[in-house]
Image (tube, rainbow, N blue to C red; front, side, top):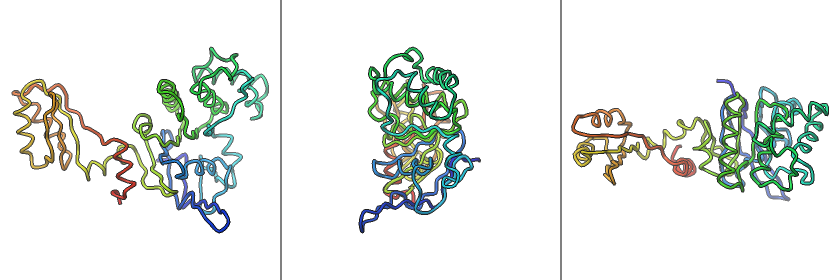
Length: 315
């Protein structure tokens, strides 16, 4: 597997007089190329510090970071040519139109004026704002401004996008539109690292994730990799939608040696087991005396996953 981002023992210490704050504390992180990587942690956990180091805006106290194969300290200029950044609280010129904003920003990135304008129109279409190209930004909603911020991050046709809390403050419809944009961009082969303190964003959008708290990386991996230890420790959940024969099926399931809990509620048989018994349940459900509409594994919620690692259950 190749990685868009790799860090090794990354440390960032801020000093305030005699007080030291370790914003990053020995972070080893690997972001696979082509992934949507959710960098999750509470406010103040070190997410923005990490992004600032990756893009060359901050120097680490110690450790090493590579972005797209380039050293984050020695080759930050080359990194910025290949990376699109949407920082939290990204600013726009409110008195200018969307097209004027992007054309100006493109010129700051050394694009010729004609190329900057044509690229601006291209990325406005990519984020669904082509019909608002000539509207002043002052008339935009928060969600529209975030989409315009995404458009500026795409101006350089980057290989990697770094998004810092991109959906904070956006209404549900706007956040859903923004997630659709990220999925589409990712489907084109671009890697996306998205920092967030919103747990639901991980489950709805990300292929991989890391959990960080007080500067320490608690866990990382694919979404399934992170969920698996939670299932193994707390139980494997299943939901069986039963059309008829539910009570009889309930009794059979209760007598399975792996079953921890089984309950029939409104035609749904909810099961928690000590192991992965999906194939066993499927065999039972396939018996002729039962009418089963569906059998679905129930994944742990992302709140459960975070609490699992935050409490150290995964150690």
